[in-house]
Image (tube, rainbow, N blue to C red):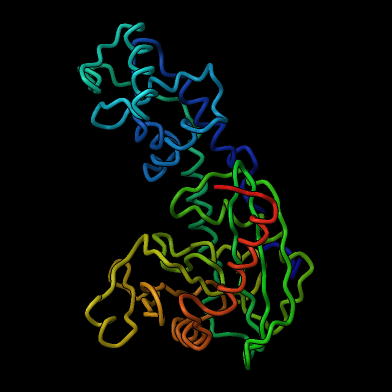
Length: 332
């Protein structure tokens, strides 16, 4: 691995979000309910509410888990028609009235006094700490090669990571590699690095990054803590990185300027944190520095390498990752 790790990450126990969620749900007593947002706040960040719902709806949640005691913030019982009806019946047996599809008197029955280690708060603190160690650039040397890295997901916990290296001069492919592995962290917005970093490290293990820059499918400084996955990869591998994402999760930009000029600054809390760029095809992409790169360098390299929808190395890595998933019969 290039130069080793920049710091020791938090322990595996903090990463066991699914186990923590199941433990929190088990604290909800009979005759009480909680909400997905309440559970997410006990994890340490309400942004995880959707992830909590996905975990409880998945086959991994054990049958004995009282998932029926978790409802939406407006009291509605979650799930498909059949699932919601079954949950309502279980709640009725525990003395909770469900009228239509909603719990009656939600605020009286609502349980929020969880005992929790708040793992997402600890991960957020780690992001904030590591953000201070991110190298703001400029690039330490001329970039000769670009390496696109992308991760596709199949059924269950399967992840398929691909890396494709090209020459900057002509985008000729120098080498490519793909790996598959199981992931142990759910998708939670602004915590993507904890889900994908192990796959990125695996596919780049032993890769000579001297003179290369990594293009990561995800955000860099366009992130509420200025530390998206591209920053996390760059800080961990001590390599230059740029994040290029297809969705904006945080920040704002001038849409009229983007239509007129093809590019507009993305602002976060009033400060420029990246760029919205109009590619030849499809909606805008959002580029931002990860590590060892300035804002202007991130814009220049992203635009210079742009394909139809993303930079060419990322398009090639995406195709390779999807090919790996298809070859493995990975659905999802």
